[in-house]
Image 1 (cartoon, helix red, strand yellow):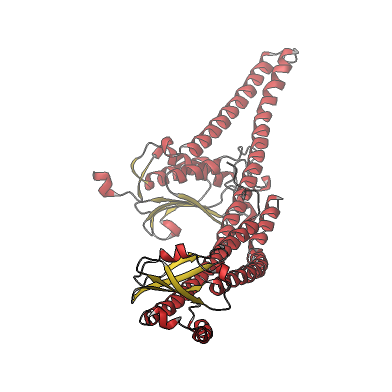
Image 2 (spheres, rainbow, N blue to C red):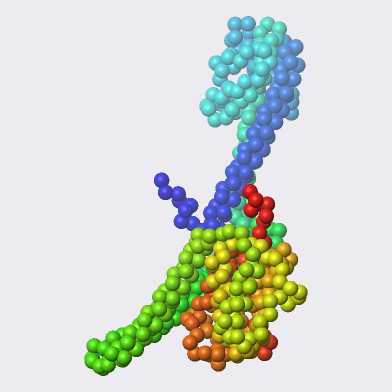
Length: 486
């Protein structure tokens, strides 16, 4: 069954629920008050009838009703006492006499048959008028020679209860209307923060991710907590969208760079094969040179493909690409020194501790030696490529603050801050004016070096400034000898 409140606004539903509860409360209060008042009125009449019956029961009926003059005297007294009808019954239950107030019509009195049904035990009972117009309350008590019954109409009590109920309905209706109207404005004011949240959400859905929910309530309130939580969530969403946008931009750049890097050697290969097909290489020496160019471009394509595959593997499952074993970074530092000297014998090369202080120190790590050797080879090749011949290079190795460190520092031209921020990006190459040769790679060496270092739970750091050289620092966790022994 369809919920009728589902299509209504929150304010309307809250108002209907509140008005319903208010109506139920007013109805309950009115019922309790009228019931208590009715009970009070009936108890008062019962008390009067019981007391009057006990008093009259001591007087013989003949003496009470023996003369019209005495009856005339009793008429106002009956109204004053609250028992306007007195009846005597003999031992057989027949009515032997009675008196009633002149203000009570005879046809509205209870019938004799009903009166004879009243038991003489002092317990009040309800009777109906002979014409059925009103209710009566009667009490019977034994008297000399029979029974005396005193009865009083409940007309005034019923009228009072009726007036109270009508008054309660009228005042309750007015109060319900007034409180419902006040509730409407109170709910409208109370739900204003939610409307502002709704407007903020609509603006964000429209593309304005910088919008935030304003301080619409005290921080300790429910609305305040909701606003703070929403702002936190919106901040995370904005960062997520920004990261996605940046990732898409990087992916587009990456694809463009890959296409460019692949296209260059492929065009070289295709151009050479076209020359051969067209017969433009008549001599064997020309063919041999063409094959050398094809081989060179094929080697370049193979290296680029392998680098791209390695980066993809490191992104997907870095730990799976490593074959760890205990080793010391001093081995790599010594080999790097020999490799750099072989590349450029004119360079002064110094082997020191980290930061150039003291001699090289031990740096035990649990790592893949081949992968770390690839990292150091990239750093050494970077120093050889981007510094002038004869530029001094320092290779530092040791332990700093509980971490193993290997650094390659040169005294070359250095880099600007913007270049340093992007130097580890894939396919990024600094201005070729810094390069000693025009045979620079595809710009993946430092990106691979950083990915391999991070795969070892380490970090590849850079300190550089224009005119002050560059220092690449590999920082790795030290080998845990207790784990190694196990």
